[in-house]
Length: 336
Image (cartoon, rainbow, N blue to C red):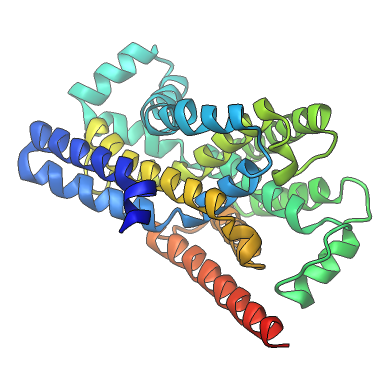
């Protein structure tokens, strides 16, 4: 009970406020939609919390605090309200205020515009997350392996320069060849921009931190902050679009998804403070495998739709398996 109060009290208070906000907007229907979206976003985002903790444990206290305050404001309102508005503004060739007016007065039109950007969103987010996944596993200095018969060969491949970029470019090029002809160029361009964005962010981390990769990005506060925001954006893309199946009110969607974002924040703080990643040997591996699965599903969603619950379910299953393997390893070596 003390643990819940310490780490999750703020999230429960925020949830209560958002449910009241939902009731003010749409009565009990708004409350129900906010609650459903909050539960879905929370349950499907544990891998996001683990990745956040991976970076935050190496981040200075100043930048850690900035991420957990400013970063959460960006995550809740920026990525789940402002960013979708900007996407629609670019696609519809309208000003952001015009798009916001459309979202309020003509939510069906707004939803249609946002959904039409699925190809670009899937390619950009999928490419970025694929690089996050590859950077973690294609590392010749990596010594701990969970799924050894896959991870060990990937480690050896890591001795080749820029092999992660080559693998990611190959995946994007191959998938774009199967995408409908009128959408192929859009998919390819957005995917390349996703790779460029990752390289720039990773390069900033290497410039100031001396190394590159997810954990090392934390050693450069600004780069780690930007890295985490982009990872969160990539995680939230499909959730924002999928939420329109329940409501076309952007404020209801933001409130519901914001509940999930706040619980991810609480889980992140818990994982960092308790040293959970150090205690459970393979938990980090499970989170990055979940990212790999999400990246693959996002890229392949240009060809076939996969429900968000399936995506999140696979991620949760991988993390639970990694946790189980960690507990088994811990007991085995404790006994010996």
